[in-house]
Image (cartoon, rainbow, N blue to C red; front, side, top):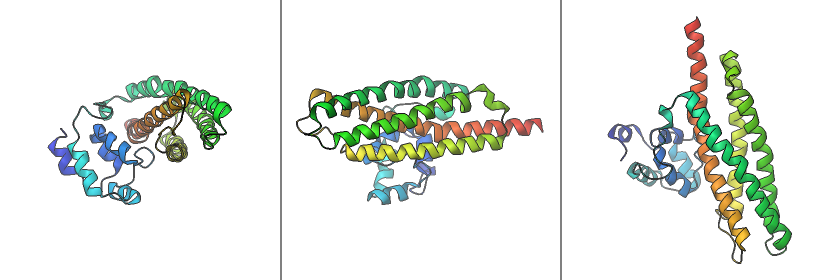
Amino acid sequence: MICDSFISMVTIQSPISEILRDSPQSVGVFHRLGIDYCCGGKTPLNEACQDRGIDASEVLREVLSVTDGEAFGNLHADLWSTDFLISFIVANHHSYLRTVLPLAIGQMTKVVSKHGERFLDAPAILELLVELQTTLLAHLDDEEKVLFSPAISALSAEQIQSIVSTHESEHEEVGRKLQRLRAITSDFTAPEGACTTHRSAYSSMKSFYEDTMQHVFLENAVLFPQLVAKVLNTSTTHH
């Protein structure tokens, strides 16, 4: 269970990212309720719940009751070193995105070519997946070449903060596309009469959605603050 100190600190006014930093296992609650915790992580819980027409007090009670074995488990990413966190994000999330997105696009391409006349939303879903792939693959490359590179240590705090702000803005764009994907697929529920490939595409999209939400949360709420703090500490030490 969540420790008593966490319970005493968290209120319905707490930002979602703060709640998840202390209780990563509660991410499943936000997933299920459709609350954006990656790009909307700075939003207070009560405001996010109001937007969804949900009782914030009930959500908070559910968050506080989640056990350690639920959701994506005991990551405790806030305790990881910056280097380990970067390695995890690249090896786990970046590699997965480069695998699952082409898979989902290939599956939906078959659906559109064979059943496009029956499922009129399929072309729009495929188009959105292609947009996401174009945006995300360029974003991943940029992160790995610049933000995650050892050369980042040579940049000033202002330069790093500027790069981080750019990446956060790109995350917001991805977040909007992800919410649209969730909406037009009816929360990744395959339509009646869908073939095996069609159902597999929806499963791939759901996995991609959930993985990217966790991925963006780790960067926005944990990694980026660490990178900025690390440079600030270094510059303070040198002075």
